[in-house]
Image 1 (cartoon, rainbow, N blue to C red):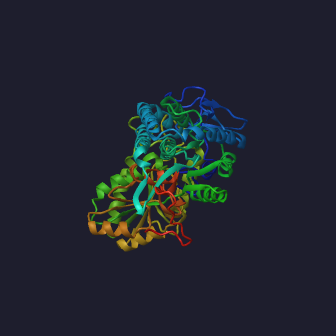
Image 2 (cartoon, rainbow, N blue to C red):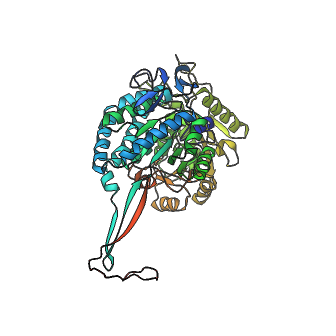
Image 3 (cartoon, one colour):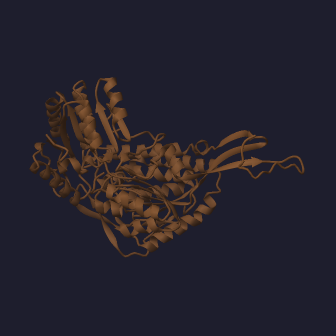
Length: 532
């Protein structure tokens, strides 16, 4: 994520607003995405709320404004939170087996609508359909994990910890919890949050990005069709006003955020100051270290896909390559050839491998970063500026770009560009490469390409990064693990989804129990209780 990015992606404006939400006047399942007005979803119904402010929803492939999204007020946030709080009172009492049945039903509905969701994502985000479909499927894996909530919420029991005394623990939901999510994964990232939160017995308020809000409307409808009581899942869109409304609302117990580091810090500081539990995922500058003993064709193939897939608009995208020793020149030439061969086009074109970036402002920022890198002394190996797609000349396209001989002092290295730009640094040894990775303030993901188990083990133990791939460029954990980085990539002590997600959305109670069976018998004492 970049200093310019909202949640796993986006710009600082996107992150601060990290808004979006809910309802289109036409079916959100249509192939061309939202048309008309995209509204909130509160208490099981679409609503424009009290705000008269509107934001544009663009078609990145054409550069055309295709819809408007409601930008909510604090009053809209309060309505959503109060609705969720009321729904929570009854939802928390629903048995875990009944919750699981609703999760299973939701899982089947999402699976049935994978292509519908993917088409909406492509229409508003711009990523190619195959990539959008993959996003939905990865989100679906978290739903499947949450279906196991009866097992996940099992407590602990210890018999006879003292004479006639047993001890046990169990977990309970927090209440109303909120998710503030980015444009780059409008289905997957929210699904890191709301399926687990809801399965644990909480009520949820989602505030997705205003850049691509319509997928959240369809997700809300699927929850309703699955049998989730109205008010348990709500969607409210907006900009900073809506974000601050959630962060400062006294009835919101926890906030999950994915976005840029400056905004993650702001979210963490603001929400914790008001007593909330917070997990705020920040920026990234993900490195791929390539050793001379690696299969360089294999490495080049996977780095190219990881760097340019989704136009680089992924918080786990490889954006920096560190070549070690003699691997440098050969690898750069292979990356050059592959960057030139990437097929850039409209997301609905089956032959396209990479689509446009999300907005014209994003395109301009990426173009400026390439220029800055060249001005700082980097060697521009492949220049993606000025790329035009025939028939879509007004689209927000930037071609794959590759800069070599980059140093850690350059801004093109320091900034999270969040676009199809790969930078290459050189190191003489693995130890030097690890120093480069560890000196970077971000610690989201990293990868090493090598044929040496010893080198891989050294790397995984010494890098100060949360998610590590060995010959795997995008090491996003499966849903039954947890996702999260180190350093400036995470604020708060809990990662998202997986076991840590269950822990984040619940709190524990520990019970010590005794049932006296002899009338009048008492062993009360003034000293501190101990076993015996």
